[in-house]
Image (spheres, rainbow, N blue to C red):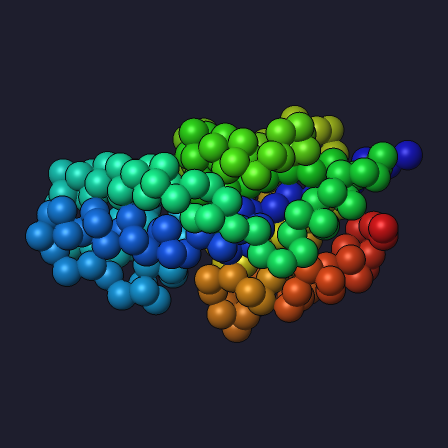
Length: 225
C-alpha cells in the first residue's frame, strides 16, 4: 500500500480568517500612526511569513518599523482571537471539516499542514476546532523560509516518507501553488480563498467548493472516499 500525503494550507483554504487578519493588520498600522493597507493588499499577503508580508506592504519602511508592525499584528491578532474565540474568528469553510474527516479515515492517506501561521497560532487553531491528531505533519512559518520556498513541503515529505509523486498541496494562493511546483508535487487551487483564481496558474486543478475536491484528488492521486 503506497501512502499518499494531502497537505492543506489553512487561512483561506480550511478556515475563513480574513476578518481577523484585516482587523489585526489595521490595528498594527494604526498603532504606528500609519494608514492601514487596503483590504485587497492585506489579503494579497496572506500565506507569507509576517516579515516578508510587511516588507511587501511597506517596502520603503525601515527594518525597525516593519519589526514593530509584525509585533503589533501578532498582539492584535491574539487579542481579537481571545475575545471572539477560534470558532468564530476563524470558522471552517463549508465542507472543510467533513473532507478532513473523510480523508483522515482512509488508511492510505496522511494529512498535513503547510501554513504561514506560527506554531502557536496553528496549535490554537487546531485546539479551537478540535482537530488534535488529524495532521501527521505540520509545517509553520517559524521553521521555514516563507512560501513559495519549497521547504515546508519537502520537510513534510521527509517526515512522512511519502514520495513527491504521491503528494498534493491544496491552497488558495499563488504562493501555495508555486511552492507545490517548486517541491515537485501536484497543486490543487481553491476558488473560495484570498487570491483570484487567475493567480493560480501553477495549479494542476482549481476547484470551486469542497464537494469538487474529491474529483480533483481522484485525478491527481487516485484518492476517493
